[in-house]
Image 1 (cartoon, helix red, strand yellow):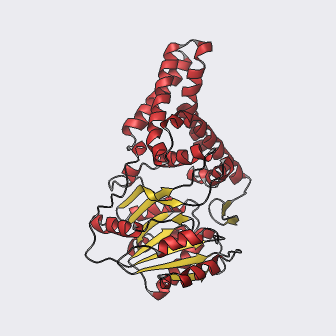
Image 2 (tube, one colour):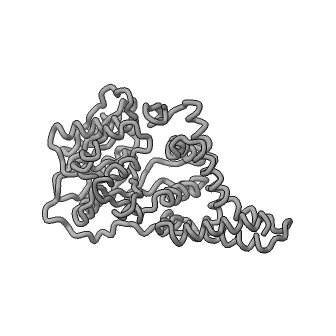
Image 3 (cartoon, helix red, strand yellow):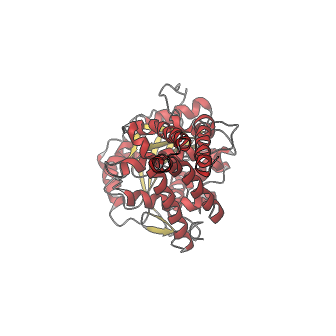
Length: 389
């Protein structure tokens, strides 16, 4: 067996494992059904929205929270994190003009203590503000760019109550434009599912844990048991850290949403690149060895199949080309459900190697930023925490 055949066979074997035995990650089948039974008594919920310079988006996103069709007590705390665009004033105006405006409290974050990432300090400010009034049964942690369907909170709470879950989280639909982001955004969701197979996250017997920060419902007692937001004060990948912390004490659930979406535009490669490079090396625990292994794995999975197939006219190695074509077909087919979620043609699946190569480059750039001590950023501001070191 020559080297090219061995590489192609190894790639095909890896894809067979991923498709057949890696937690059904590619099927996109973890969804809220909307058929969860309603609880006999709807518990109180407080949404905490960290917001920094979000005045443009709030008229849609904050209004979607105000419009929630929720039978229980529901309050909203918007934590205005040193915004310079009048975010707090916009929130107050929206509350003043909305029939449910009494739900909203706007809290300005005090000076951030050392060791806190900016977003986590904003969330902590929101929790402290809400606790000073009336501690809820659940927290809804959501981002200021997320627009919620009118019944989202009702469905989240029904799921948590019916299955006695400590945390319910949905990965919202991200904005995917017509250019490069039309490939890279669905690929980001696909890679996230591969890294944290949702079926394993939702299995209480599995150690895999995660969450999607745009939409997280968590029991107040479970968050307190996990150490509260203070235990996450230095986390850059705060949502997955929250999922791990909560799952140590009880079951959690993570799924995909088709009704909740981020309305923050993703213009192209640069936006996705910065999003990934901000935290990718943190995911690898800042280890050069794990980085090297990750890059080699990405090359084996995403580059070996198409390059081997495309090299056939010169190499004339039919065995290697056949094995590689099988691997390329498997990755394209596994990408199809995520593409369908974003209304993309399944033909885009054959471009997944391009996304894999770009995400590998983003991960390398994330390591470069770390070693140059450029730090993590939230809303254009460097934050304290593990990425800063």
